[in-house]
Length: 250
Image 1: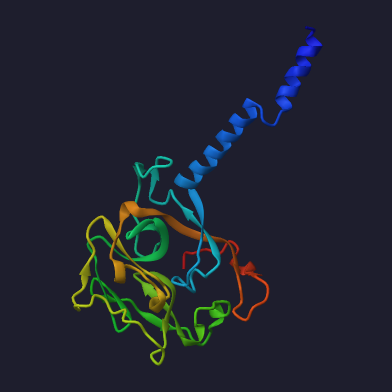
Image 2: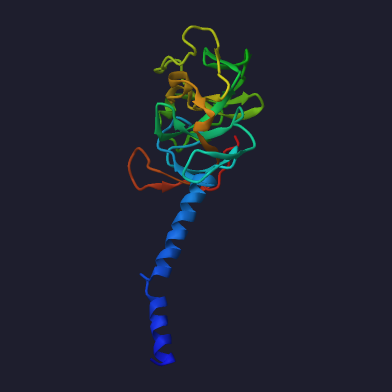
């Protein structure tokens, strides 16, 4: 066999899409992508209105998984930890009642805090978190479809974190979201956080199913990658260009 023949066969092998070398490289690429999604950052689709208007139905947000710790890829084993979720953080976490489902909510209380909701006002450690009326400018509600006409718009100051909150009007249906039912503030156990949706009367959260273990937290929601929604009156899906790269700090 001549050198020319050997080189020709080697070249054909290298150009074969199904060669061992190409398949191995592809496998390593997929492994790296999934490891990054598990341990560093991952996109999430938001299908519900529970965090509106901060996070809108149709948002695709990015959760930063290194916000609090580093987990070994494909496991919940924490390799290193450098912090925990703080009041005001928006987190992605495993739903305590079904860990196969991911939820996104705002942390309003941490381990050791006492929390209560009285007359639609959030209390943390006995301190009422102030609400300022923002109904003079409801522009942020223009592209949401969750009964915005019955919603009142506020800015809540959560121990220094200023963010949006919407609540049903007193004349509209308002579910019983007073918390806790007994009237005595709930103390959050150490190793847990208490989470609530910004759409206060349309959110299933810790007021209903309890605290979230810290080791169930997948990451901190940082910003909206892109967003799309379908108007209720029909028509084509619409891109929310102003949501692209939108920060979720407030």
